[in-house]
Amino acid sequence: MKQTATSSIIVLLALAAVLVAGCTQTSNTDAQGFVHDSRLEGYLDILHQTIMEGHPQNLTSWRVTWLNSTATKVTWAYTYPQENVSKNATYQETFTVTRFFSTKAASGYVLQINSGYKVVSVTYGAGGAYERFNGNPPTTFIQYQDRAGEGKFIWQMDEFVQVGSLTRTYAA
Image (cartoon, one colour):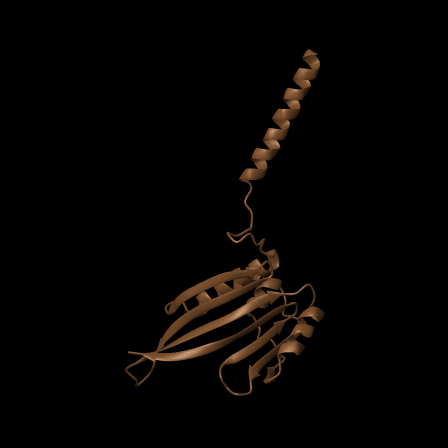
């Protein structure tokens, strides 16, 4: 009986240790309960670093909102003083970034939504955020711009798709 009680206590202590360890581990689950896709999260971190390096003095905001486990909404803004003009130009870019399970799935999605857009580039610029994140440029890259010239865009970089818009306002 003593041996059974001792064995039971050891099992309970081991179980308690496992449970406590599980409670103290960090998780990439947010307040809404979404488990963040680690590749998408990594890409967004590098994208943020790249944008901060490109706008060290004039980045005014950066916000990421997770829409689900594999899609986010990103909004960021920056301000430039305009030459020979008394007003500053403020640019705000808002886009969703979605990571698909494959490049083919991402391409299929882009084909469904690209009506009203034109291809403006199939060449990825060297040293961009995706290349810095992935270690090499995307094998599939397509950049679309809306035909109406309203600042809307679609970018596909392998399994990642960015869809959004860029707006410019002037303020004194």
